[in-house]
Image (cartoon, rainbow, N blue to C red; front, side, top):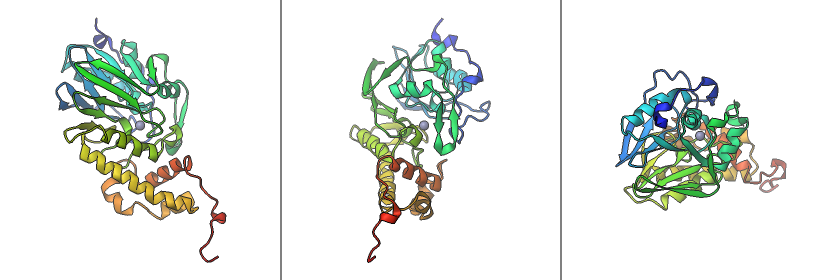
Length: 316
Ligand SMILES: [Zn+2]
């Protein structure tokens, strides 16, 4: 029996539920998995939670992220509709439950789970995401990645070279980006929210500088035909990624000087530094005030925040 046929849905206790939409697993009964063709043998699967990447071919199915545990059966059905080969590998782009919720089901059925070492570490213990005041329980053994890496690793698989590399302190401290070198496709996990303000998990070591660097790293490896699977949002182009990257930089370069001038968090949010961008980018689940607060929080880790009473007053 192949692993794919042995998959059974494990008790819902395994679900690591994040508290805010679209991170939250609500009622998933009506969720349908849609298959979006990316290029020959490469697909994006959408349902609820982070976008899934899929490579199929003679070596087997290769998954990137797995949404929530109750969706495993539907995800597996979507894969079997495309190939008779079993799912052999699963790469997690980071530890969040909307990307790793199916891990226990996959691990139990014999799929080899691979991720950055900080993903295994965070999934092994209780996590607290301050931005949503949300606790995520430690995952059971079967859900944990069995192969971990620090900088990068490469799969020679399905006649492609799948280069998996870490980007530091971006969405979290354990992000992986997957580059299908032959297919000219990337899966950027949550370092890329296509068309909307992203969530940056500051409690897990994320920063806006890291997000910008991640986008720059990918952009250097692209050409105009490259396709990019984002963690959330529709399948993206290089143009989409460039616009998103420039938005991130603009927001950072507005907020950083306010911070260096000694403005407090509340005052920065009240100043609405992203007002002109909100109509385009603030319609996703990260609302503008929350977004500004998160960018500020992330920079607190990287920028010295002088005390307001020490900031020289002009002419004073
Ligand atoms: Zn995430």
